[in-house]
Amino acid sequence: MGAMDKLGKKLDSRLMGVVFGIALTIIGFVVFWQWKYSDRSFSQLYTLISASENHRNDLLVFSLIPNLLLFYFTNFQWRWDRFTTGLVGVTIILTVVVAALILL
Image 1 (cartoon, one colour):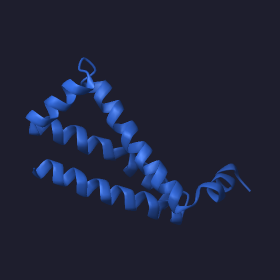
Image 2: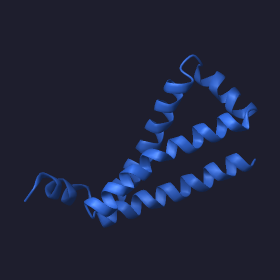
Image 3: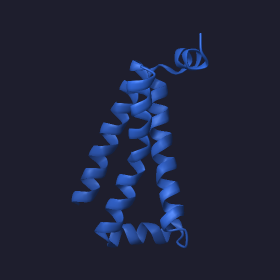
């Protein structure tokens, strides 16, 4: 039994998919913020996002990209079906929130 099989048995649950989905979204947000807007504090970033639709779209959409990468591995490569359902559930909820924020 390989290392990924052992890890898969431990992580293949909906709860772990939800946890990883939320954590990766936060990590994606912080990475993009530090990469593109590192000269701004969080309050300045919030003001920029509120004022500019283009900046808001970039930042919110980029936050979801790590979930897509993890989805590829957990669904197509490793076949962690329960983990993937948790990840997809969180991603759908976050996508609806992002779409609502973009449209407002």
